[in-house]
Amino acid sequence: MPNPFSDITKDDVRDATRLAIQSAVSAAALFVAMKSLDMGERFVGVLTAVFVVQTTVGTAMTTAWNRTASSVCGCVIGIVALAVLPDGYGTAGALAGSMLLMNGIGGLWPEWRYGVVAAVALALGSDENVVQTAIDRTLAIGLGVVVGFVVTITIWPEKASTRARRNTDRAVRALGEYVAGVMMSARGEERTGRKRTREARDRYESRMNTARDSVAHVRIADDEALQTRIDAARRLYHAIAIVDRVSAEAGDLTTDDDTLADRIETVRERLTTLIQTIAGDEEASADDPRTQLEAVRAIIDECGAASRDSATEDRDTPAEGTLRPALIFGLCEIEESLERLVDAG
Image 1 (cartoon, rainbow, N blue to C red):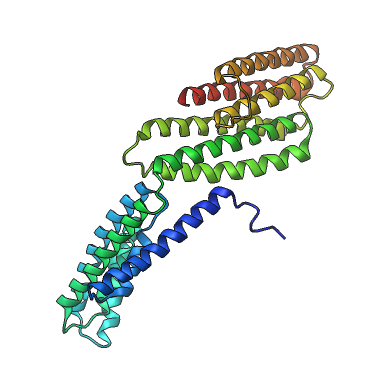
Image 2 (cartoon, helix red, strand yellow):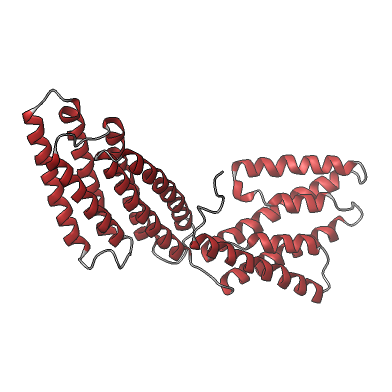
């Protein structure tokens, strides 16, 4: 049975702890504020304050705006539904109508779906005090947005740019594991290489998705440099996937060719070290990334020469005739992608 905690990292625990603390503070602060001001509709207010809390300051800014805009929209829809339909069983119609409209809007713009909270809150009100109900619940939602945003930017805040940069580094580090597994498979270490490859791919995809989402919420820092680095990492991933596909098709690409096997092992070592250096691992190597890149380029050229020599000796072997050149092409793509990643770094 798979261990549900096996994929949880220190970063995941850190993010979960931050969100838990911010949510707790936000809920308590909003309740105290509403009680001090003798405000009603505390449930709606607390719910809003908790949902506005986000992992980064940039995300909180976006969320606060979306919550406010969608809440106003929900309030308008709820008031209209409440005014048109009578109290009592007519409330069911008011709920149905408001949910029809608000969720239709949310289907087109998902970030506005929070407006259903306001729509439900107003649709469940009494037609005898519709104006006061609208005012009370709108104020509660507005105060919740403010409190949730303030808590996010003051209690253990994190910038979207910082989060994007950290997760991009984690994604690049996973690519180091990915390329290591792929090169092991190319040398015939199928079982170990495939397992390492699958795990690394999963980590890469998870971190890259988080990084891309964070960049979308960058508001103050330069997001262009971050996006360039993310694009370079994605290009590297696709380049490694070429070699992955070739090794999966051919199995051991170094059969009866000790020279090529040695070259591929050297490529694995140097690629892994370079990628870890780019990802910010201070223990990977003291050499400059560009110096390491030149070494990688040289050994890939040697692999190409070894592959051509083997093909000259025996052109009838499929692995030597077609797959080995494809392997070299993939390695060259990896080298070019790494050059872009070094430039972006």
